[in-house]
Image (tube, rainbow, N blue to C red; front, top):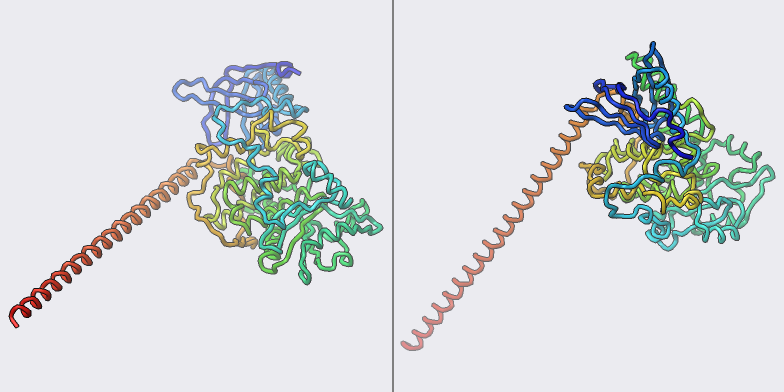
Length: 556
């Protein structure tokens, strides 16, 4: 298929662009296979807007006489309006945008056509290979295999796992201080008959030393776990896992989360300026409640490991959504390496991409689309929001800043890079993403770009950090949900001023250290001079004594 077939009107002159908190701009609108491009006509104020078609969630058409308007609502939550003279021209452009923003084939998306203009210093695809990641762990930390979900595990491991057991896939993902380990898996397929798998029991119990207990954190309610048995799923029976205590922490999934995001964005876009209305809508969305539930489960997992000295197994149903939220956040709480830029990137690759989180399905649409599918859910956005909550409470313990988290959110929904394409490693392998697309990490980890994501307040902290989950401690992530609804100039100026203060503080600190060094060197020199002077005086005294003795011997 040629993109030209979908573009009915490739260009529109005398178009007008409207954006909140920006002056109205008149210019030319152009459509390409992957971008909507708007260029201003003013020579004294040249401005361009490049918008990926894949970032468009939905469009609305409005008409007033012969003037048509297209309201474009994006997956990154911004809203822009284009006024186009001529009804037919407006309809053609709207139809073209709708077709180009809903391409069926993944291989027609922009990452397969993007050619980077920067020098590739590091190949992001090979930066976090599974073999390298698990070399970091101790000898006990290895894959625990089983299961049927072959598309989330390298083929050479799956063959072995199929010989071990038939119920589920289980990974040992993190070794804290052996024998405390963290594992994740899908649910055991016990069914209504309460089937058991001795290999599963043996493998899970192998992580515990004699006399030690472990905790199974099920991210479903007890009622939901019991209902899953009717569909062939289930949970661990205490009689077969006597050393494990099962705890249920309900975390919502799928359409409930999607509806929550829709309500939250609607509340944030409400311009009525009514306090009661705003607070009521915010509460009705339940978004902050879900943040609290996820953080509470993550803190529980971290507490079991750090305070109880116990191993933890986390699972929900498939083990590719709420399970990943809990295990990832628990590692951020416990492991200072996960709070660095490289460590966080490694965490995302290991716990989200390689673990089989279906990004293609979950991020297919955002908060504005009228065509909702049951597999869409802002699971990854919720996780990033939870990370921001911890970053907000511990602003000096993270090497990365809020801009880094916002960038990850944007690229998960629409990107020129292939990192978040596909639903699992099997699909990415078939699409040959490593050969045909560029990795997001290749761009992020450039020294030039990396400094934009670094937190100027960062000071390495090797301690465990315990975030508060009290309602008073949790805040709306304004950097995402209110970003397009308020002017950002003052926030940008405050950010720049903070960087200047931190840089000046470091300059003064370096100067103090340099002066201290000079003082120490001066004191050392003075000490050496005094010692030399004392040595010379001692030698002179010795010589005087020898002269006196010589005189006494000559004149007895």
